[in-house]
Length: 504
Image (cartoon, rainbow, N blue to C red):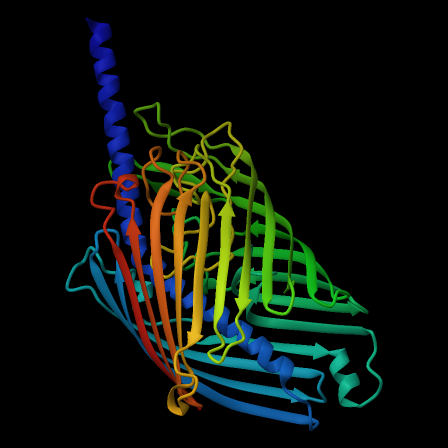
């Protein structure tokens, strides 16, 4: 009889453990949904802006010894964001950016940009939907980007001497860094980069640290994950420009967790779980961009992740809910590939196909966190990084345990009409599936069952009304496979963004 009572008590304890753990994760996932989607659209805009600035400076002619350029933009945007319960919250963002660019003799450059961004949230009076205090009101930092650059080849070109096959570029400051094609790193960083060119061989080295409040960590269980993330990166990338239609490269990147050793008590208030954080990772990979004929453009990158992390402090077999953490290995991988077909018609129509895949681990409750992370005595196969690959506006999952094919098109709607020739429509469809149906993605789902998470359709409308006025609309709708979500977490989610930008 005593033995029966013992097993009944143990069963009751396990049930309480499971229900309590799921409650913690459901509450945590809902609280982060608002900020995650707002950050996703901002990361997409940051990535596009970084590429635009790179192309702009590359094509700017050097006609005088001293070049000064100043200006700015004002963007007013409105966002509607729905969470996993189809509850809506609204965000209005007036955004002013002022920049100064200086160049001397084609070889010394400076760029600085101030940003004044105000986040005004409307959650219909619901405290449950309210974002963190950090996400409301005026945002920091005001000094968004500032860097200086020395370009040896620029001096050579400016003095009209013969261009050499050797060049050295040193660049340092606060910038938005896209490493490779962004799979392992795409973020604001304090960075020093050195680029050495020897004929067709390019060698790039980098030493960088994450830029404080602009960094949202993959470990969302760590206190301060979106206000105090400090990770140091050092790496090297080698590319070859000797092929006419292809630019292959290889890279190695190492990340050191400066928040390592941070401790906190997590879990329910009545049963706190001591948790220590430490995640050190390295990435080696290869990629290439180029063309396959006159009308087909390709891109692709693969990365292998290694390193060490600490195991989950949760003990699923003990009523105490805690267990000693261990250091364990990381062995994960991710990659993506894409093709763009250029129709070369009057509307500059483009068709795009891509696929993103990343490894996951069934011995985790969440793909990126330490609390609910890798179970003891297991190698961690979940891919985590501070990179960014576009997976849509609405669900926006990370690569871990994800297989995401997508297809889309974009075209100028009225190319022969003068006032609307820059009115461009785009549409992309995404399919989200788990590689291992027992392993998590970074969106809360049930383990087991179907691999299909759902599908999403995104629509964009961009119109350059005048040379200095742009109008943009972004709309996305995620249609879930409700069977893979927990109760009240499987509703349709929508995202809507409308903004006007004035450049001066």
